[in-house]
Picture 1 (cartoon, rainbow, N blue to C red):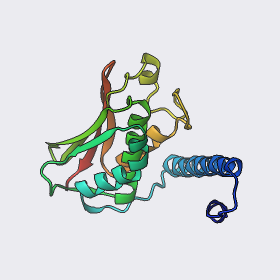
Picture 2 (picture 1 turned 90 degrees about the vertical axis):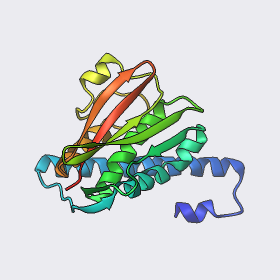
Picture 3 (picture 1 turned 180 degrees about the vertical axis):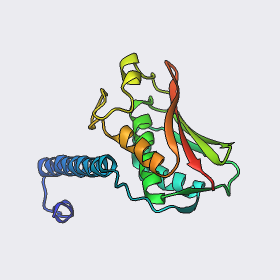
Picture 4 (picture 1 turned 45 degrees about the horizontal axis):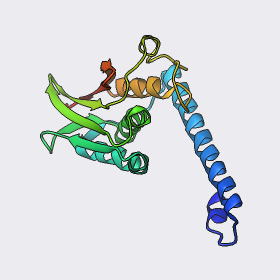
Length: 196
């Protein structure tokens, strides 16, 4: 219904502004409900993951494509350095993409305008480590202490659930998410994927 209204040519500027706010509220509610459902699955021990082989580059591309407009709005360049290009991981593609979108959304929120976010890979024993690094101001001591807790202290919009759920989903796939480093010049997280 919002879509129909947004396509109407007979709207005033004020009406379009109201519709834009309604769209944001709708997206926020969908995100919160989705996170709560994911949390309920995790807590019940009934996280359903469908593991198969995926090109890591495809997962990264799907995640970065989903955030293209957000990055463009702040003139932030997202650079993906996936080596080797054909590296494959064992994952639930949809859930892995969601986890990566969550990390990138956080990075975009705190990265300064006209900066960059990098994604780089390195091989591990039986897996692949994907590092997501931004040039933001880093995490406070309180944020680090509660980083993966439900409803963790955070700045800006959101519920404080995303990072916790993202890590739980990656662990359900045999992988993980961890904080690598955070300082006044940026923050780096690692996402571990199984390759076999």
